[in-house]
Figure (tube, rainbow, N blue to C red):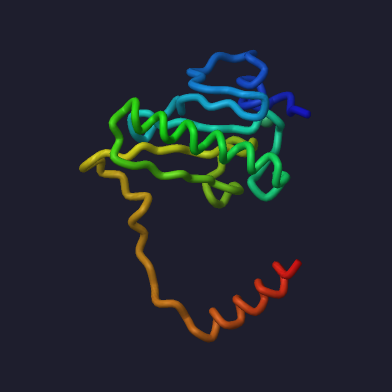
Length: 141
Ligand SMILES: [Zn+2]
C-alpha cells in the first residue's frame, strides 16, 4: 500500500533520492534534509501509514527496533552525547508529511536546542484522578 503523492513513499520506492543510512524489509532511515542537529535522521515504515495512531503494533515494533539501531549508530558516528526521539502526530503537533516518521535528533553540548525544556505546570489532582479513571477504563483489556 502506498500513496501516490507521498514523498516518503517515493523515497521508499527509490523514485526520489535520499541520504539513506539503513533499510530492511520494514523500514528505511535517511538524513533529514533540514536537520536541526548534525546527524538528524528520520526513520519511516515502508508501508504507508499516516500517523502513529494508525499503525499496527507490528509496524510500531519493527519501526522502533530500527530507531534504536540507527540511534545507537548515529551517536557512535557523530560522538553525540545523547539524542531525542520525536514523533509529531497530526498537523497540530507539527506533522508536515502525512506518513508516519520518527525523528532521531542527536544532542551535543551547548547545541542550543530546547525541545526538552518546555514550561511545566503543577498537576491538578481532581483532573488527574478523573483522567486516570477514564484511561484505566479505556485501556482495560
Ligand atoms: Zn507514504
